[in-house]
Amino acid sequence: MSAHSKEEIVNSVPQTGFFGHPKGLFTLFFTEFWERFSYYGMRALLLYYMYTEIASGGLGIADDTAKSIMAIYGSLVYMSGIIGGWIADRLLGTQQTVFYGGVLIMVGHIVLALPAGVTGLFLSMFLIIMGTGLLKPNVSSVVGDLYRLSDVRRDSAFSIFYMGINMGALIAPLIVGTLGQEYNFHLGFGVAAIGMLLGLIVFVITKKKYLGLAGTYVPNPLAKEEKKKVFGQMTIGIIFIIILGFVTISTGILTINRFTYLVSILGILIPTIYFIVMYRSPKTNEDEKSRLLAYIPLFIAAIMFWAIQEQGSIILAEYADKRTQLEFLGIELHSSWFQSLNPLFIVALAPVFAGLWIKMGERQPSTSKKFSLGLFFAGLSFLVMIIPASINGTETLVNPIWLVLSFLLVVIGELCLSPVGLSATTKLAPVAFSAQTMSLWFLSNASAQAINAQIVKFYQPATEIIYFGVIGGAAILLGVILLLMSPKIQQFMRGIR
Image (cartoon, rainbow, N blue to C red):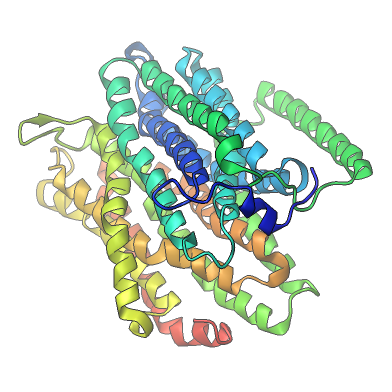
């Protein structure tokens, strides 16, 4: 595929028709809506499916191991985006990569819908990790391709697209979770597969007409000679990993626990290598080196934040299932429904925060101060969970309002930190490493979940007060340190606010 200019790509896209936006935004909105529906629907059930007894339709995996697997799964989903970015940049272009990603995700959900036991679980995880890595980072790139850089509708387009993500995540636990918990886990996973199928159908039927050339070009294609070499190396690598995996698993060397330790180490090692390589590169000038140093404390703060936020689908999911009264105002609740709270609060509050920052203008807090606020609210979301245990002990069931409050507080923190983190990443990135620095931002979540894989094992009702207290307190302490460092960080940013 020959490279096209930005002008050719934009001119090939129907320019209005979806709320004043290119019709291609409709294609991408619904593709991502259904992808998030399938992912969050599956995620709302997965922990329960793993630790529920075999006799009750689950896999009977030990609680601690199930929680570790959930964290590692989330970590690998974020790490796989690096592979998806490389395939789009060097081989297929973003449009084709999104399609193949969707196919892998759908097959992964189909495998999970079959009564294939633990083998089916790990096969489906592998397929969904790879599929999400191909689809997730690239579908956002195609959104950008629909607009000229000067188009004032760009920010509005990403806001509409972001709503699609959160609407899919909002309704999924209510539909998939209800079916899975009321009838059968496999029925729930089957509905998640149908969700991804609907996304693929919308994508395939409308892409030619609505997307035009957007996402079809390969920015940095491999030459023919390079392709042979790279495919050869990839084939050897895959065969080596399969043989190594077979030998180590069959001999008992590689256990689930050892694998989680390995990924946890990688979660810290990979971003560390990224920082060192970028900082020491001759392509990075003195100003950019200074900005990279300013980015490190923000990156560490992001890891701390995501470590708490991502426990919503692990620790708070278990809390909803085992520690919460599931009847409220005469309504029978399902524990999976609580997973809809995060996207619900984001949809409700994101416009409020966007308006607030615009209204404050120059008076709004600096990037590092917003990060401090994010950590403060994240820490608070864990500290409030100490209160019911302190009042009534850990033997009685808790009013669901406490969980609702915890999810609300962490979302306030997320809206202070997450969009700001994306913006700061684009501003502080060295020019030669702009795309890779964006991958690095997403690695903050991967690192957080890799660390979580070890932390979540310590949670039990008996250790509840210490668990929530130590982690919540650590986040607030880090927020205070970041606040004190704020003037110094601002100095290192070399003129960037």
